Length: 418
Image (cartoon, rainbow, N blue to C red; front, side, top):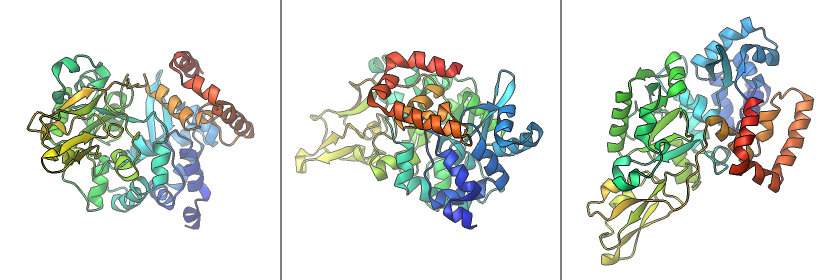
């Protein structure tokens, strides 16, 4: 097992491959322990050679040197464990290696299972995902994030609610989906194994659309109706949980129901003060100083400690740290005096159109764009082209141009066609 401790061998190569995703996987002993328990050596070897984008069986066969007949059962086992995601494209299956976050970390704990040592893996996952600042920095390095807060709509004034777009409303995200599934909350399930469960609902993790189909096909969750999904959202709002949804406008894959104590995304805010770890909703908390008596109940409810109480005695008032506030609306029901409201933000909250656009922007921000273009990591010419592309794209004028909205639509169409 020395190769696992040192990060060498097949698990070291797999870690390097995972780290090329926009959401990275920096080396750490805890990660090697996780990989060695989730992947067999054969699966790790396949994963380390898989392309970085969705690829059909023939394409993966070329990269791995295995025949399609050999690969098919291996990829099926990996998909059943959540290590690979498979979706149909133009009548044939395509595959992509699951990243760490929004990938096999969650899939491993979306159900109770006896084919993996879940309690043992949970200890390493907490050490890596919650205690390692390097991992948090790798995941939340840029401004564009995988998750964004969805405001509790019942806490917004009706006239303000009519002004926000459909993709900014949790209920509309659910209603417009084509499929729904529910699983165990990965974060709270892990903490349960660690003896640190907070008591909030466990079976509420919702996946949508094609992601729901994937989860159901591989036994990672159960299929539910639109009505049951809406009931879950109502229940978690009443529990004071934050709705954090897929940061895309079209075909979102999931909505999490998060608490400040267990959630890995909110942990980055609370423990490492990474205030950009979750994209905000179009709202923020606002206080009426004439009504506020500084009781502090709203501050206790805030999942990211964005509210503080200032002043002494009768002059106590609630104040907001705007750069921390998610705009989730969890705090508002705590105020019995009508001093707290959810006010529209002055700044525009930009949401990527699709998951592919988000991946490209995240790659540009994190200096990994070259991995999308030249993703055969065994070829020397691809290594040279990655190095050249990284230098060019890293130049401030080039990077600024590629990230500008005027260039993006044409740029993304060309990449998608490629």
